[in-house]
Image (cartoon, rainbow, N blue to C red; front, side, top):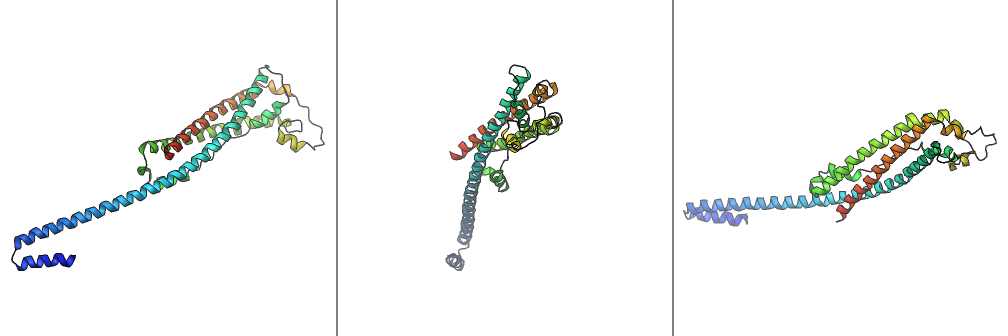
Length: 249
């Protein structure tokens, strides 16, 4: 093809058709430029197609991550709701709305349990590191970014609650009600562990538990923090499901 064009130029020059030669040369340049532009456009199109495909794969990973987040959050809601239920029953005994019973020993231990959600951000990190965020729908971008910002707020709330357990509730219980670790405690792990303990149990003074105003405040705080966390988990599930719906559309 190049030889063909070169031959045409040579013939024009040899025939003395200089004007036509220059017009032909300009036309040839234009054709080359157009060819380059078309090639660049095709290359850009192929690259964009590849980036969109890669972003879609990252979205599938994000979807799997979110499904795991939802499963964790649902389990944590169930466990935290048990904390709230125990706290409510405990507080009814403080208020003398219910007679004090042996379950307060179990409540004291269960209210020490911390809650932590373990978020897998592998899909999100891969999407960001590959600059793939710009190759997905803007509304979906906003929802994904909003979700992971919300997760940071959730983790902060968990940290507040867990810090309160470590620095206030747990030390107070262990210092003042150490005797709850015995075979009379209905908490399964305790009763199982101490079932073969031949020692005589210490005097279990349950009324001293519900007459402790400082303990009551600690239980109230555990109930309050747990209620907030349940709401955070529930909203995280809602946001995650909205993203999954957008990815699957």
